[in-house]
Length: 280
Ligand code: SAM
Image (cartoon, rainbow, N blue to C red; front, side, top):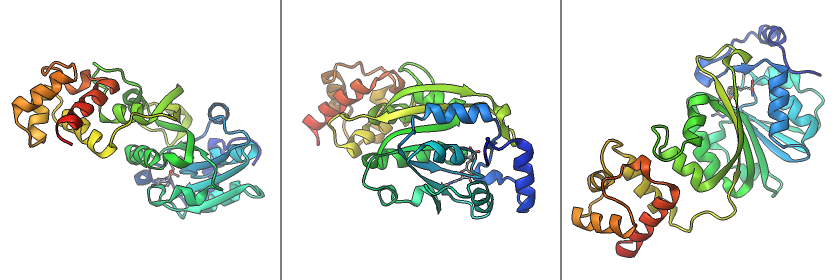
């Protein structure tokens, strides 16, 4: 295949293999050459080792393989692999892996180098894939993902906004978002309900020096009841007296009447450090 798969080519391929897009697997396929080219360029994958999440019919895969050093295309759906193999014939630097990305040991797919990850993500499992990327950060340098616009807004959110949440704090903790752009829902087949965004992030070399399990326990406790103050949310979730909690919050230089969405990553790190001094 030379250019990107057009909608009519995709329909022909699906017909050839007796398939229709599987909604449950989030199969909204890209059918716009300009957007495909833009994503590939944006992903900075030229000459890199790349893992693609959810290769589907190979729309991005073909382009990635043309410029990357090596591409490992992961796809959960056995049926769509027939199309993928058809579209990606004769690409010697491509390895296809039929697996759930969430179950994979990413390190086993690399040559020991840090890889670039690219994926037009299946929307039903976006957060799990993000947390999986965070888990596998030792083997990943950068990732470029297409997500629903609303998820991108959560990832990019500033403290004090309603989009700011657990996911934002985790993203800021592990990564720096380098750049992003929005994509219309009209460039997919079938057309999804909402627009999307493509976002590129790199893993931080130096992240906050905390026990991550304990740190995120505090963050989750604060966000457990968004409408409550951090004092009440923490008191609901942790087995610690309110007076003690108030003391810790003040030690961190925070007001007990703040709400979870008001705290920046630095505020959470300070709050964690005060918990650590007193309790951990
Ligand atoms: N890359 C293609 C494109 O851009 O048109 C397809 C993207 S489509 C939005 C998401 C793809 O991810 C589908 O092909 C779907 O079968 C696959 N997928 C869904 N869940 C997955 C999982 N857990 N692991 C790997 N692939 C998955």
